[in-house]
Image (cartoon, rainbow, N blue to C red; front, side, top):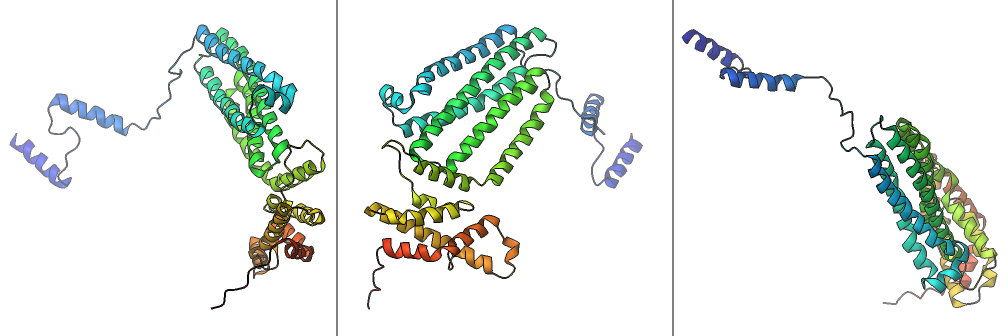
Amino acid sequence: MADQASVKDVAKGLSGGRLPPGEGLPNGCRSTAHRKNAALLDDQPTRAPANFPIRLTRLDVTVGLGALALLLAAFIATQLGWFFGGAAFLRARTGLTVSAYARRGFFELVWVTTLAIPLILATRAAIPAEDREVRRRHSALSAWIIALLVAVSVSAVLRLKLYVHFYGLTVERIYPLAFIAWLVFLLVWTAVTVLRGRGDQFVAGTLISALATLLTLNLVDPDAIVARTNLARAETPGDAQVQPLDVGHLATLSGGAVPSAVTAVIARSNAVATPDDKAQHCIAAKTLLTRWGPESRARRDHEATAAWRSWNHDDAIALEAVALRGAQLRDIVAANCPPAPPPAQR
């Protein structure tokens, strides 16, 4: 025993005061320590459980997805009158203004569509592959839900279209439209992949479509779309409730919208009649000169040394458009803006 103790003391000293796991412990404790140590050193990868923790039956799928399908169908049935009646039906039946109706309903519809896709995916995962009858029931009900969700998305787009008709288009209204278009693609993609047993392709298609949507938004120049849409809307005769063209907002756009904004401000300057029109044209012309004129920061950056490193195509278009008609914009400022007060004398 003395020899064993001396050997342990030597080993303890050589190991810096630490003994191997389980050394010096009773046999029962030693075996437990060795098992724990083996588990820590095990480098075998752990596998996820083969089955989903929840298993749905045919009744579960029928009741859950069937109730959701009936709810969506009832909602669409209540919208049919508005689909064909337009704003007049809206004012007569609901008492809501167009802006209140569009804002209150649009994002709720988007949320319904956004939450329904994970629901379909989760319920599909909770059905084992060998339960083919349950999977067929799930596919049938999910297909109906997807078709109804596409109709709900159409309703959301129609609400936003009505809002744009009365109040004009903005960049902030283009992005929700792009998001709805992507959601509709996801719904169709879910039906093509998940409901047909090719769920492994769903994630890749979702990521690729998201990147393609972002790339498209950068290529199409949303500011230019806003300018063209609002100018076309201003030229189309409408009812008295349609808001007139806001040249002040038009001047705040960038990129390919600036040439259209410059043309619109100059072309409409001769029709200025009210103080509000004069104020709008004053603000619009000043904004264009401040952002893109000869004394603007964009012009200084464009003409700085090694400016090619920060060159931007949209900025170049805007600078050229204002430079070509800068004199006319300055004339609009002089004609519509109140003179600056003289400096106070000390």
